[in-house]
Image 1: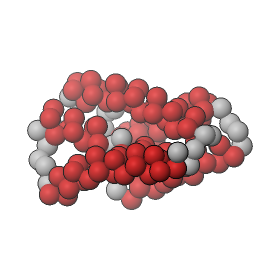
Image 2: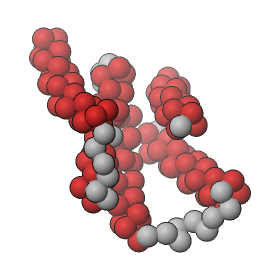
Image 3: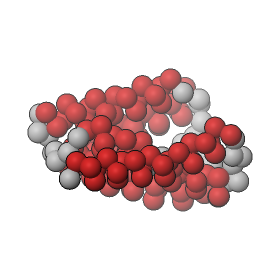
Length: 138
């Protein structure tokens, strides 16, 4: 969990650094995705001693399209960062985690804990507040 939080925080730092250096959003996304693939493969094979991609086919069936959408979202984030406030863009990226959470609940019949329920209820409220805040600055 700590590594996940650290990785997610570093993602924001690298995006801001890339924006300051005016790097290509496509190149940044490619590097981030290749690094994350290498990290997962190393974690599976070296640390956990498992064969990558040997599990249930449903994992790949869900992971590939969501990975594609995540890549598009990162490109949109990089483009948006140049035209708006980074805190708003970063919040929208964080809110996008609701999609795989809902898919996990629907497809894998994952239990909805009180914490997940509260988070899922707060997501549309956060989006509404973002819209209101943006409207007030217009």
